Length: 417
Image (cartoon, rainbow, N blue to C red; front, side, top):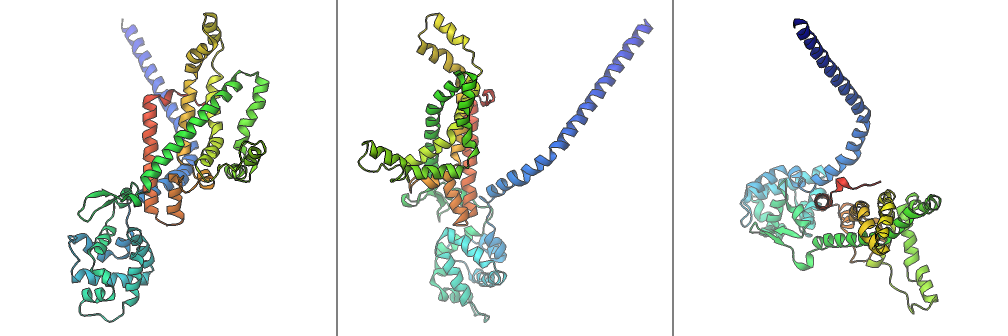
C-alpha cells in the first residue's frame, strides 16, 4: 500500500512538472511570436492608428486661444458671459494681441475665430495694427473706439467659447448644430445646414452602389463558379485585372467615356437612341457608374468564394424530387450563398462610405460625399477640428453599422474566401 501511494504521488508530481514545462514552452513560443510581430505592430501604430487618433482628437481640442493668449483665456472662462466684459478683460485682450502678434500666433488665432464668424479675422488684425506702445487710461473705451465691434456681446461670447478646451463646438457643427447665446443647443438655419444632408447622401449613395454591385456581381460569380475550371480561371482575370490599375486611372477613363462628346454618347447617337447627349457625368449617374465599376470585383470575389464551395448535389437532389429549376435555385442554392452575399455587401458598403476620388471627378455640386467635405476642411479651410469631428462621426457610423450587421447577419460566420 505505501508503495502504491508513493507511485501515485510520483506520477502526479511528474504530471505537474510536465504541465509546467509545457506552459513554459508555450510562453516562450508566444513571446517569440510577439517579438516577430513587434515591428509590424509599431509600424501600424505609428503610421495608421496614431494619425487617426490624432485627427479624431482634434474634434474636441480648442488650443489656439488658450495657447496664444492664456491670460485672456483664463479671464474669459471666469466671465459670466453677460453683456461685455470689464476693463481688466479688455486690458488682457490688448496685451494678448500684442504678445500673439510678436510670437507669430495671431494668424492662427484669427483663423480659428474666423471659423466661428467670418469677420473675426479682420477684427483682430485691424485691432492689432492700431495698438501702440502708449497705454491709454482705459482699454475698454480705447478698443471700442478702434472698432465698434468690441462692444458687441456676440463677439465676446464667441471669443469666450474659443477660449474653452475641450469644446463641443466642432462636434455640434458637424451635425449642423450650435450653442445659442442662452447656452442651449439648436439646429443651424436651413440655408446653412450642410453636413447632415451630406451624411444622408453618403449613406444613400453607398447603399445604392452596394445594391448595384449585388445585382451585377451575383450572376457573374455564379457563372465563374459553375464553368469548367480552365474557362473560369481565364474569365477570372477580367475580375482581377482592375486591381492592377490605379483607381485614378480607372476613374479618369470613365470621365472620357461619359462626357457629352464621349464614346457612350457617340454610340447612342450613332444608333439613333439619343438625339442629344445624355447627361452621364457631373451628376449622380456618373458617381454610381464609377463607384460600381471600382467596387464590383469585391462583391464578385466574396460571393464566388462561397459559391465555389456549394456542392451541385443539392440542386440535383431538389430537381430529382420534382422541384422546378428556378424553385430549386431560389430555395436551395441561394440560401447557401448568403454568407458570401453578406460579406460582399458589408465590404462594398463600408468601402463606399469613405470614397473620395470617384465622386470628386464624376459627381456634381449636389453629390458631395462626406469624405469630400473632410478633404475640403483639411486642404482648403484648414479647419482640422471640423474635419476631425466629421471623421469621428464617420467612424462611429461605420462601427455602429458593423455591430448591427454582426447582430443581424453574424459577420463572424461569414466567409471572405
